[in-house]
Length: 136
Image (cartoon, rainbow, N blue to C red; front, side):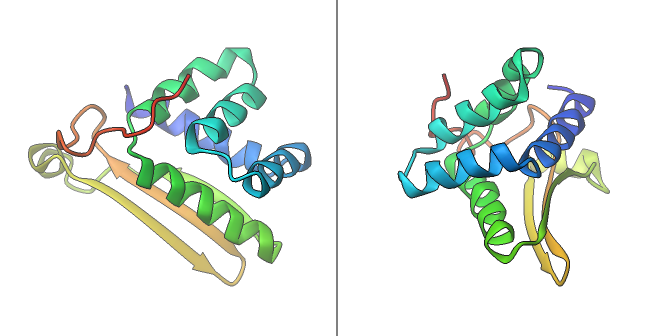
């Protein structure tokens, strides 16, 4: 997966999570204790047919903890009526990140909103940092 594709996906996710119909569906999934794959399938479907496969492919690289962190951070922002964003940031030292197979996931909760930041080198993750959820 390319860095550009990752940046596209986080932009799409940020825009989707801000839409009232998407918020309503995600709230319903939370009440129903939906699984991460159910959340991701719903989000990808709401993104539209031209973006669905890209979103599914991007999330297929992420382990359950990363997915649930993003969803929990959104829920925290939603409950507080604050903005929410998912961002991708190129590592400041990409060669070191790639060599150590580092993935950085950060949640910033501030007065005006919540932001999830994901930094990684695509396809350069530790073997144990692999998906535990399979997305349709």
